[in-house]
Image 1: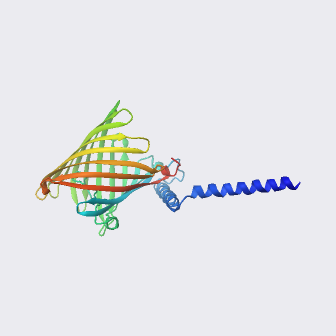
Image 2: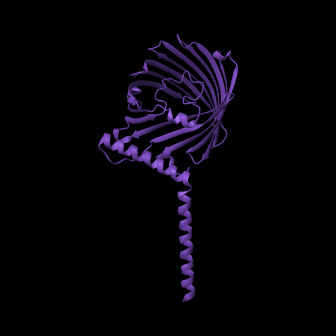
Image 3: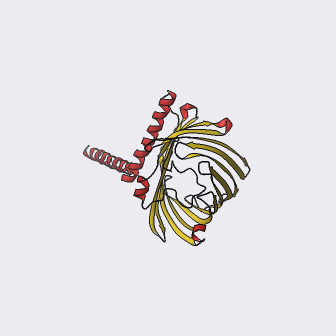
Length: 314
């Protein structure tokens, strides 16, 4: 009788040890547990806002997310840093008509004049401290291809703004095109208009090429910015991708008159599951203000995604 009892106790001890080992694996290290905690917080925010605005508690699915991207920018002038984040809280109980949008570059009104990351500063810490965060409620009218934003820049004094976008697009086999018209009005930044047009063509499973054109007009200073991008995307495998891009930028106005062009390669790789991505981006920039002398920079960054879609095991 003693031998079966000893065997049973041994099996129980082994099962308990395996259970503890499995629990420790599921909890993971501090950065894994932090990711899970923040993702669950994003999910809770979305569900609570959804319940408040719709009056319904039950949510079948939640695709809300938050995205962080940060790292150093190395150039001939030294090392700088940048920090960008944005969040999209989707509210399905409002019949998918509403979003709650948070962005760290709320006062940056156009990407048509960007030659580097918009939040570039002397360090990542300074970039975080100097971020001008905006929070807005976005109303989506799918039948019109339109969305309407109303929100504020979270600075003192508060800076309310309104944005309206109309989007059109179509897919024909491996071809896809889109265009977007936008009008915006900021209490302190002024008003303006923006237009975008682009296309992309898929070549098999691994390659995609295309072009984008954008222009932005600022009424307050009567400034106009133009930008044209040509790109090629290459999928190396399930985890790694390459983006090759050539961009031409022009500006017209009393205080902004100049041309520039740049080209870069952005190598991205999933470092852990589907929510931790590393980027390596060497870039050459030629600006008219610098007599088109080549200005080399290297951007190293981490991209972290939080939310219910990133709590899985992919």
